[in-house]
Image 1 (cartoon, rainbow, N blue to C red):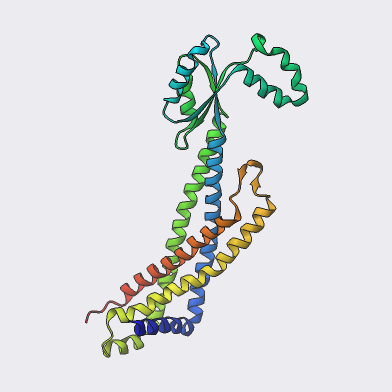
Image 2 (tube, helix red, strand yellow):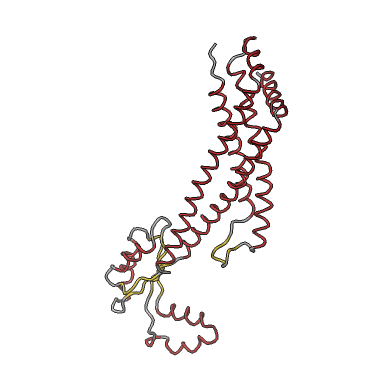
Length: 299
Protein backbone atom coordinates (compact mmCIF):
# COMPACT_ATOMS: atom_id res chain seq x y z
CA UNK A 1 0.00 0.00 0.00
CA UNK A 2 2.82 2.40 0.87
CA UNK A 3 4.56 1.63 -2.42
CA UNK A 4 1.32 2.22 -4.32
CA UNK A 5 0.66 5.47 -2.41
CA UNK A 6 4.15 6.75 -3.23
CA UNK A 7 3.57 5.92 -6.88
CA UNK A 8 0.19 7.66 -6.87
CA UNK A 9 1.71 10.77 -5.28
CA UNK A 10 4.53 10.73 -7.84
CA UNK A 11 2.06 10.34 -10.71
CA UNK A 12 -0.06 13.21 -9.34
CA UNK A 13 2.98 15.51 -9.17
CA UNK A 14 4.09 14.44 -12.66
CA UNK A 15 0.57 15.05 -13.94
CA UNK A 16 0.69 18.62 -12.66
CA UNK A 17 4.16 19.28 -14.13
CA UNK A 18 3.32 17.69 -17.49
CA UNK A 19 0.21 19.80 -17.84
CA UNK A 20 1.55 22.75 -15.91
CA UNK A 21 -0.31 25.41 -17.90
CA UNK A 22 -3.70 23.81 -17.26
CA UNK A 23 -2.88 23.09 -13.63
CA UNK A 24 -1.66 26.65 -13.10
CA UNK A 25 -4.80 27.99 -14.76
CA UNK A 26 -7.02 25.91 -12.47
CA UNK A 27 -4.97 26.79 -9.37
CA UNK A 28 -5.13 30.50 -10.31
CA UNK A 29 -8.91 30.31 -10.68
CA UNK A 30 -9.13 28.57 -7.30
CA UNK A 31 -6.89 31.31 -5.85
CA UNK A 32 -9.20 34.06 -7.08
CA UNK A 33 -12.34 32.38 -5.77
CA UNK A 34 -10.69 31.55 -2.43
CA UNK A 35 -9.60 35.19 -2.11
CA UNK A 36 -13.22 36.26 -2.58
CA UNK A 37 -14.29 33.54 -0.18
CA UNK A 38 -11.75 34.74 2.40
CA UNK A 39 -13.02 38.34 2.15
CA UNK A 40 -16.61 37.16 2.58
CA UNK A 41 -15.74 34.94 5.55
CA UNK A 42 -13.89 37.85 7.21
CA UNK A 43 -16.95 40.04 6.67
CA UNK A 44 -19.37 37.36 7.89
CA UNK A 45 -17.29 36.72 11.02
CA UNK A 46 -17.14 40.40 11.93
CA UNK A 47 -20.80 40.99 11.09
CA UNK A 48 -21.72 38.10 13.40
CA UNK A 49 -19.59 39.59 16.17
CA UNK A 50 -21.05 43.07 15.67
CA UNK A 51 -24.59 41.64 15.69
CA UNK A 52 -23.95 39.85 18.99
CA UNK A 53 -22.41 43.00 20.50
CA UNK A 54 -25.39 45.11 19.42
CA UNK A 55 -27.91 42.62 20.76
CA UNK A 56 -26.07 42.46 24.07
CA UNK A 57 -25.70 46.24 24.32
CA UNK A 58 -29.29 47.17 23.42
CA UNK A 59 -31.29 47.37 26.63
CA UNK A 60 -35.01 47.92 27.13
CA UNK A 61 -35.63 50.63 29.72
CA UNK A 62 -38.87 49.88 31.48
CA UNK A 63 -40.44 52.71 33.49
CA UNK A 64 -42.52 51.55 36.44
CA UNK A 65 -45.83 53.26 37.19
CA UNK A 66 -45.58 55.64 40.16
CA UNK A 67 -48.65 54.05 41.73
CA UNK A 68 -46.84 50.71 42.15
CA UNK A 69 -45.73 50.23 45.77
CA UNK A 70 -42.11 49.40 46.55
CA UNK A 71 -43.29 46.19 48.17
CA UNK A 72 -44.85 45.10 44.86
CA UNK A 73 -41.64 45.60 42.85
CA UNK A 74 -40.32 42.01 43.34
CA UNK A 75 -43.59 40.52 42.01
CA UNK A 76 -43.58 42.93 39.07
CA UNK A 77 -39.98 42.02 38.34
CA UNK A 78 -40.94 38.33 38.41
CA UNK A 79 -43.74 38.96 35.88
CA UNK A 80 -41.41 40.79 33.49
CA UNK A 81 -38.73 38.10 33.88
CA UNK A 82 -41.24 35.40 32.91
CA UNK A 83 -41.81 36.96 29.46
CA UNK A 84 -40.33 34.95 26.59
CA UNK A 85 -37.14 36.52 25.32
CA UNK A 86 -36.12 38.24 28.56
CA UNK A 87 -32.53 37.25 29.38
CA UNK A 88 -31.91 39.34 32.49
CA UNK A 89 -33.48 42.20 34.42
CA UNK A 90 -31.99 44.75 36.80
CA UNK A 91 -34.02 47.04 39.07
CA UNK A 92 -32.94 50.66 39.53
CA UNK A 93 -34.67 52.93 42.08
CA UNK A 94 -35.16 56.68 41.80
CA UNK A 95 -31.96 57.58 43.63
CA UNK A 96 -29.91 55.31 41.37
CA UNK A 97 -31.46 56.91 38.30
CA UNK A 98 -30.64 60.36 39.70
CA UNK A 99 -27.02 59.28 40.27
CA UNK A 100 -26.80 58.23 36.60
CA UNK A 101 -28.26 61.57 35.50
CA UNK A 102 -25.78 63.53 37.60
CA UNK A 103 -22.89 61.42 36.27
CA UNK A 104 -24.02 62.05 32.70
CA UNK A 105 -23.85 65.83 33.09
CA UNK A 106 -20.56 65.80 35.00
CA UNK A 107 -19.91 68.98 36.98
CA UNK A 108 -23.16 70.52 35.77
CA UNK A 109 -25.04 67.55 37.15
CA UNK A 110 -24.53 68.61 40.74
CA UNK A 111 -27.42 71.06 40.41
CA UNK A 112 -29.78 68.05 40.28
CA UNK A 113 -28.86 67.07 43.85
CA UNK A 114 -31.73 69.24 45.06
CA UNK A 115 -34.16 66.70 43.60
CA UNK A 116 -32.93 63.84 45.77
CA UNK A 117 -35.44 62.23 48.12
CA UNK A 118 -39.16 62.98 47.94
CA UNK A 119 -38.61 65.67 45.29
CA UNK A 120 -37.16 63.14 42.84
CA UNK A 121 -39.36 63.25 39.69
CA UNK A 122 -37.64 60.29 38.01
CA UNK A 123 -39.27 56.89 37.60
CA UNK A 124 -38.14 53.58 38.98
CA UNK A 125 -36.74 51.48 36.14
CA UNK A 126 -36.14 47.91 35.03
CA UNK A 127 -33.17 47.45 32.69
CA UNK A 128 -34.04 44.42 30.56
CA UNK A 129 -31.61 42.47 28.38
CA UNK A 130 -33.13 40.42 25.54
CA UNK A 131 -32.03 36.96 24.39
CA UNK A 132 -30.22 36.85 21.03
CA UNK A 133 -32.88 35.02 19.03
CA UNK A 134 -35.75 37.32 20.03
CA UNK A 135 -36.81 40.61 18.45
CA UNK A 136 -36.38 43.56 20.77
CA UNK A 137 -39.55 45.28 19.56
CA UNK A 138 -41.69 42.20 20.25
CA UNK A 139 -40.31 41.73 23.76
CA UNK A 140 -40.67 45.45 24.48
CA UNK A 141 -44.32 45.35 23.36
CA UNK A 142 -45.07 42.42 25.69
CA UNK A 143 -43.40 44.14 28.63
CA UNK A 144 -45.42 47.32 28.06
CA UNK A 145 -48.66 45.32 28.45
CA UNK A 146 -47.79 44.13 31.98
CA UNK A 147 -49.97 45.89 34.62
CA UNK A 148 -47.83 48.36 36.57
CA UNK A 149 -45.52 49.15 33.66
CA UNK A 150 -45.76 52.74 32.47
CA UNK A 151 -43.52 52.54 29.41
CA UNK A 152 -40.97 50.26 27.72
CA UNK A 153 -38.33 51.94 25.55
CA UNK A 154 -35.30 50.84 23.54
CA UNK A 155 -33.23 52.15 20.63
CA UNK A 156 -36.25 52.15 18.36
CA UNK A 157 -37.21 50.38 15.16
CA UNK A 158 -34.05 51.63 13.43
CA UNK A 159 -31.89 49.62 15.84
CA UNK A 160 -33.78 46.43 15.15
CA UNK A 161 -33.75 47.07 11.40
CA UNK A 162 -29.98 47.55 11.54
CA UNK A 163 -29.57 44.19 13.30
CA UNK A 164 -31.84 42.53 10.72
CA UNK A 165 -29.78 44.09 7.92
CA UNK A 166 -26.62 42.63 9.44
CA UNK A 167 -28.31 39.22 9.54
CA UNK A 168 -29.17 39.56 5.85
CA UNK A 169 -25.56 40.43 5.03
CA UNK A 170 -24.36 37.41 6.98
CA UNK A 171 -26.83 35.00 5.34
CA UNK A 172 -26.26 36.44 1.86
CA UNK A 173 -22.50 36.14 2.30
CA UNK A 174 -22.85 32.49 3.34
CA UNK A 175 -24.79 31.74 0.15
CA UNK A 176 -22.12 33.44 -1.98
CA UNK A 177 -19.40 31.41 -0.22
CA UNK A 178 -21.32 28.24 -1.09
CA UNK A 179 -21.64 29.37 -4.72
CA UNK A 180 -17.89 30.07 -4.91
CA UNK A 181 -17.20 26.58 -3.54
CA UNK A 182 -19.35 25.04 -6.28
CA UNK A 183 -17.55 27.16 -8.88
CA UNK A 184 -14.18 25.87 -7.62
CA UNK A 185 -15.43 22.28 -7.89
CA UNK A 186 -16.42 22.93 -11.51
CA UNK A 187 -13.03 24.47 -12.36
CA UNK A 188 -11.04 21.60 -10.84
CA UNK A 189 -13.36 19.04 -12.41
CA UNK A 190 -12.91 20.60 -15.86
CA UNK A 191 -9.11 20.65 -15.50
CA UNK A 192 -8.97 16.98 -14.48
CA UNK A 193 -11.27 16.10 -17.39
CA UNK A 194 -8.88 17.75 -19.85
CA UNK A 195 -5.95 15.95 -18.20
CA UNK A 196 -7.71 12.61 -18.58
CA UNK A 197 -8.31 13.23 -22.29
CA UNK A 198 -4.66 14.17 -22.74
CA UNK A 199 -3.53 10.91 -21.12
CA UNK A 200 -5.94 8.49 -22.78
CA UNK A 201 -3.15 6.43 -24.34
CA UNK A 202 -1.31 6.11 -21.02
CA UNK A 203 -4.54 5.11 -19.26
CA UNK A 204 -5.28 2.50 -21.94
CA UNK A 205 -1.83 0.94 -21.43
CA UNK A 206 -2.35 0.80 -17.65
CA UNK A 207 -5.67 -0.94 -18.14
CA UNK A 208 -4.22 -3.50 -20.54
CA UNK A 209 -1.57 -4.50 -18.01
CA UNK A 210 -4.23 -5.09 -15.37
CA UNK A 211 -4.57 -1.78 -13.48
CA UNK A 212 -7.79 -1.54 -11.49
CA UNK A 213 -10.20 1.38 -11.61
CA UNK A 214 -8.99 2.57 -8.22
CA UNK A 215 -5.34 2.42 -9.30
CA UNK A 216 -6.06 4.52 -12.39
CA UNK A 217 -8.36 6.93 -10.53
CA UNK A 218 -6.23 7.74 -7.45
CA UNK A 219 -3.48 9.88 -9.13
CA UNK A 220 -6.12 12.08 -10.75
CA UNK A 221 -7.93 12.59 -7.45
CA UNK A 222 -4.65 13.45 -5.70
CA UNK A 223 -3.82 15.82 -8.57
CA UNK A 224 -7.09 17.67 -7.95
CA UNK A 225 -6.33 17.90 -4.23
CA UNK A 226 -2.85 19.31 -4.96
CA UNK A 227 -4.33 21.89 -7.33
CA UNK A 228 -6.76 22.95 -4.59
CA UNK A 229 -3.95 23.23 -2.03
CA UNK A 230 -1.75 25.23 -4.44
CA UNK A 231 -4.66 27.59 -5.03
CA UNK A 232 -5.06 28.21 -1.28
CA UNK A 233 -1.49 29.35 -0.54
CA UNK A 234 -1.81 32.97 -1.71
CA UNK A 235 -5.30 33.50 -0.16
CA UNK A 236 -4.05 32.28 3.23
CA UNK A 237 -1.07 34.67 3.15
CA UNK A 238 -3.22 37.58 1.98
CA UNK A 239 -5.82 36.81 4.67
CA UNK A 240 -3.37 37.30 7.53
CA UNK A 241 -1.44 40.25 6.06
CA UNK A 242 -4.50 42.02 4.63
CA UNK A 243 -6.72 41.65 7.70
CA UNK A 244 -3.88 42.65 10.02
CA UNK A 245 -3.34 45.84 7.96
CA UNK A 246 -7.09 46.60 7.98
CA UNK A 247 -7.37 45.92 11.74
CA UNK A 248 -4.49 48.29 12.56
CA UNK A 249 -5.77 50.96 10.17
CA UNK A 250 -9.24 50.87 11.78
CA UNK A 251 -7.82 50.61 15.31
CA UNK A 252 -9.84 47.46 15.86
CA UNK A 253 -13.26 49.04 15.44
CA UNK A 254 -15.76 50.40 12.94
CA UNK A 255 -17.00 53.94 13.65
CA UNK A 256 -17.65 53.37 17.37
CA UNK A 257 -16.36 51.12 20.11
CA UNK A 258 -19.61 49.16 19.94
CA UNK A 259 -18.77 47.95 16.42
CA UNK A 260 -15.53 46.18 17.31
CA UNK A 261 -13.59 43.97 14.91
CA UNK A 262 -12.50 40.45 15.78
CA UNK A 263 -8.81 40.24 16.80
CA UNK A 264 -6.37 39.23 14.06
CA UNK A 265 -5.43 36.09 15.97
CA UNK A 266 -6.90 33.54 16.29
CA UNK A 267 -9.59 34.75 13.83
CA UNK A 268 -7.38 34.68 10.71
CA UNK A 269 -6.04 31.26 11.71
CA UNK A 270 -9.60 29.92 11.81
CA UNK A 271 -10.30 31.51 8.41
CA UNK A 272 -7.14 29.93 6.97
CA UNK A 273 -8.11 26.56 8.42
CA UNK A 274 -11.44 26.93 6.62
CA UNK A 275 -9.68 27.89 3.36
CA UNK A 276 -7.27 24.94 3.38
CA UNK A 277 -10.14 22.59 4.26
CA UNK A 278 -12.26 24.03 1.47
CA UNK A 279 -9.38 23.73 -1.00
CA UNK A 280 -8.86 20.04 -0.16
CA UNK A 281 -12.59 19.29 -0.29
CA UNK A 282 -12.99 21.23 -3.55
CA UNK A 283 -9.99 19.49 -5.13
CA UNK A 284 -11.14 16.06 -4.00
CA UNK A 285 -14.80 16.44 -4.98
CA UNK A 286 -14.03 18.14 -8.30
CA UNK A 287 -11.47 15.56 -9.39
CA UNK A 288 -13.54 12.62 -8.07
CA UNK A 289 -16.62 13.71 -10.01
CA UNK A 290 -14.58 14.24 -13.17
CA UNK A 291 -12.80 10.88 -12.85
CA UNK A 292 -16.03 8.99 -12.23
CA UNK A 293 -17.65 10.61 -15.25
CA UNK A 294 -14.75 10.30 -17.69
CA UNK A 295 -13.13 7.02 -16.56
CA UNK A 296 -16.17 4.74 -16.80
CA UNK A 297 -14.74 1.31 -17.36
CA UNK A 298 -15.63 -2.13 -16.05
CA UNK A 299 -13.23 -5.04 -15.83
